[in-house]
Image (cartoon, rainbow over the protein chains, first blue to last red):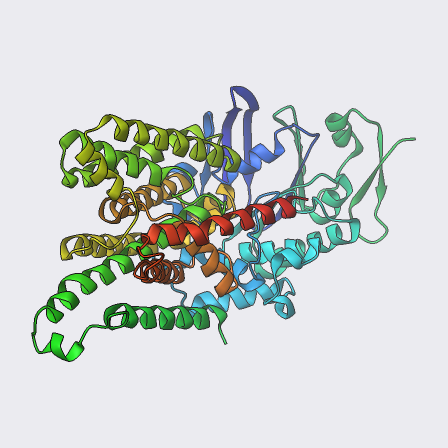
Length: 258
Length: 321
């Protein structure tokens, strides 16, 4: 099959078991959100998909091949990943940052082709930062900085993009802004998105499919387009919730019971 | 207009002016007409003294500039240049041990290479905390430098007078005793180093974003670190073997180049130019009489470098607050 697939995935970090046997296939073309309590292993699962954390047992395949057997550059043209807090060197400009997304396409000495420049232009335009491309990244607002990083991932021109809590450190309007952008990019370019999110309602609103994790195991996985049910959330968080109807979208809004 | 390009042009122009001056200027200025007519000693002065001295300073400066900038960027720390984190001290001590044990100045080269490699290995492994910890790196490097300096002093005190004098003279960074052999060795070293580091510069720049991003971009951080550390250590060790330790060029070149270019990253070519300019400038000063004597180039680079290091430390302190 195409896409990412974990089977019998176990991961230990510093001798402690973090993931206990995960089987999960990510189909191409959708937006998937992974939610769960702190320490449930959701970030570790994403980082294992990104080939940063090495499985202790089982494995992850990309297009049917073991992720760890694929040549690094080939993998980097297929699979993008944005960590939760990537380091931004002091003084780097937006365009220079986004250009770094071209690394797996560039030649040995870093020479850029016309196609590279065009991809960078497109990526910057897609996230709406064209007017800011010569600004210093460290002087942008949090929301704009996140857009610049998403543009880097877009310039990489992968067909799968993994996002680790892309809304951390952002205030509510900017959280929505980033998730709208992610969904729009998915609809326009067909890029497959898998993201770890903290906020249940945002996950419910902006993901086609929600995966719940608890204690290093999958608790539930909705079908694409299926609404979240209250009992699913209750299995994750030990709290009683209501699922309300969103006024305009066919999605659930989860609120705690009083 | 591209600021990096302008800076590179300015640095190149400065360097060329210095080169011309070092070759045909100074007091007394060589009689060029006589030199080209093959009249001695004018010809010999140009060909056997000024020529190799110029090339040695140029190649050493460029090599140190490149080694410094790649380590600073790779380790994400402006203080992480080889002359501060102990690689240079390792090479110096190694060279001194070589000279004293074998009683021959020719043993400086293998000694410097072995000492530099050992110091690099020791510093990197002691500073490794799931990645190189910036603070541990500086502390380990500075401690190692102190230990090695003391060890060298002990070694010199215990060795016979003539040998000790020769070694002491060697351990004062200077281009004054250049000949075509040392100039040739250093030029080839700098050219090979430039080729290898240019191929790794793209990867080194991406390591600044952290290993997660580097891996995502299809790089292999540990392989890059190993290759770049080995290459930078080789450049530093060989420069120590042919010119003795010339402090602070490796430390200064990168920050000056980044400031001039107005962007972060290795800016390898510009750093090489700045390093060469610093070395040549220091050597030009070394040619001037001070209180009836001449001071070696290393003294002048230290005079510029030490206050610059202090300024950088104070700035880092301000940034943290």
